Image 1 (tube, rainbow, N blue to C red):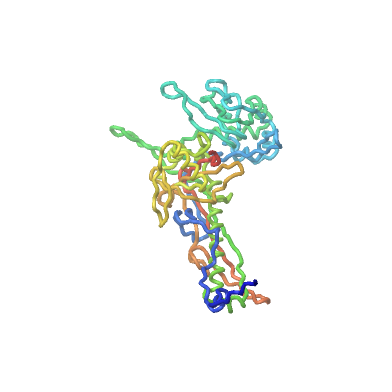
Image 2 (spheres, one colour):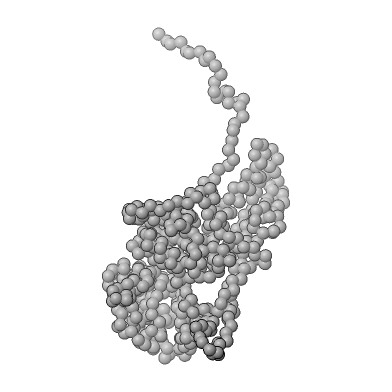
Length: 458
C-alpha cells in the first residue's frame, strides 16, 4: 500500500529566508597578523625623506659576511665578496680580486677535527664556506673555553697574523668546508702586485691608529693624576661618510567600478572595505621589508660582530642569554612562531617555564623579563632553520628606529596616503595607495641576531 505523503504544516525555511535580512561580517583576511614589529618600533619623523646616521669615526672595516658559489663539489668565494675582509675593503680591482679568489684552496674537515692549532705557525687565511666551528682559547686556570662560534660566511686570520703563531684553536663542530689562502701564496701575490701590497699596508696602518674596543677613534683623557700635569688635548672625530637611509615605498593602485561604489554601499561602504584590506596588505609588506629588505632590513644590516650561532642547533636559554650579552638595555626579542615553539621545547626539556607578559592587550612569552614577540616575516629556510632577533629601540637609547614621514599629501594614516587618480573611460575609479617607511640601526650593539636556529628537531 502506498503511504500517503505528509502534508507540510508550516512555512519552509528556504522560503522564509527570502523575506529576511542577512547579518553580514566585514570582509575577513587571513593575511592579517599582529605586526608586533610595527607596533613596538618607535617611529621617527623624516621630513626630507632621508635620515642620516652620524657616528664617531670608526676604523672597524669589513664587518660583513662572505658569499660562495658551488657546483656541487667545488666551492669558490665570489671575488667581489673578498672586499668584506678588513684588509681588502675598498680594493676596486676585479681582475685582482678574481686572481685572489682562484688561489684559495678547498679543504674538508669532519666534526671534532682541528682546522688550526694554537701556538702553531699561522700559515693561512681561512674562510668558512659551510659548517660550524668553535674558536677555542685557554681559560685562567688552563682549561679550554669557547671564545666564539664561527659559521657559514665567516673567516679568521689576516696578513698581520701570518708573521706569528695562532693565538687560538679552531675546531670543526660539524662537517666544515673551508677555503684557505696559504701564506706563501699571499706573499707571491703581494710581490707581483704593488696595488695589493699598498692595500694591505694601508689596512695595517689603519689598524694601528688609536681606537677604543669598538673600533672608534680614541678620545684622549687623563685621570687619577696628582699635582699639575699637562692635560691631553683631544677632539671627537666624526665619520666623514655617514650612512643615509632614504624612505622606501610600497604602492598599489586600487580600482573600484563606479557602479559598485554607487549601488552597493549598504550596509557597508564598498570603497572603504576595499581600502581597508588593501592597507592591511601594505602594512604586512611594510613589516616584511623592515625585516628582509637588502638595503635597510634588519637581517641584512646587522653588524657581523653581533651575529651568533646556536650551540646545539635548537634555540636554548643559553643562546638567549648570550644574545642579551651583546645588546645593552635590550628591550625585546623577535622570532618566528615556530622558533618560539622550539625554544619552549628546550625550556621544557630543562624543566624551565618562562613567564608570559601582557602587552597591548596580547599575551606573549618572555625571557629574563623581556617579551618574545612572534613575527612570521622572519624567514624559515628549506632546511627548517630561522633567526631570532633581540634589540634595543628608540632614538634616545641609540637603538633601532622606524622611519616615516607624516603630513604627506592626501594622508590617510601616518606615513600612508590615498590619492584619487581619476575615473577612466570604463567608469573605473582609481586610487594610488602609498606607504613610506624605512628602519635604521643607530649603533651596532642595538641589534643582535641568533642565526641557523633549528626548529625541526623533536
